[in-house]
Image (cartoon, rainbow, N blue to C red):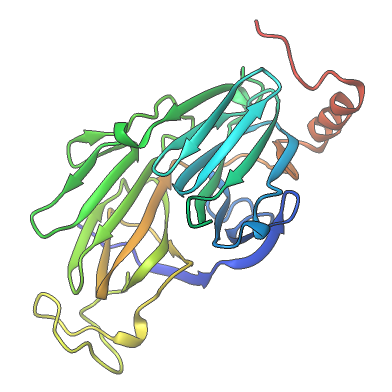
Length: 303
């Protein structure tokens, strides 16, 4: 087994999107090859409804897939095909925009006004850019959850892990999307196929994905599985962790445990032409998409 090294850790940056939704962006709109096949990752988490209620009004998508995972509150959605629905805490929506769709997403808080969710954009290869749009709406109760003997909990949203397979299927990037909790002061390893690009996003607690056998600086009060751990290396809330190559990721949880998303996918390795929510392979295709929006032919008839 070879542990994937940490290539970079960085904090998600506050920004505004939609009609003024406050969120934190871990990556997106810079180098599209950075985490190919993934293009963007947003963490929308607020406790003040004024920071999210204006939502994401009608806007287009083409050439990508958007993955929305709601932890608290709800997201009401509707689209140009007549689809409507509500995602609540624990629910997932995987939308393949394909040839084009117009939709809106309107966040709603829970009883305390809290709203928390994530949105990931995955690229589509050239031969699927203009495929027919489709949705996969998954209720939280249908997402497999596995508890290991040491208290580690893994929710398998997409892909197969520890003998369970997530309910979302038929995705171009062949992704694995896991929601993982590791208890306090535990060290845990998770296998990832070597050919996949991978990243983790910490959203609760603290921990380190660096090699725990080479500590520097102040140590935790207790050793972890007989090894000393550098408390200064612990990364916390809203931290993106990018990995190099290898076939497993190792994390050491801090004194309060750690919860993170572990996401990986097969790189597409194609040219990317990007204009907001429209991602194609060439600038000519972007210009065609803009022309389609202008002349009312953006939504293609079903074949």
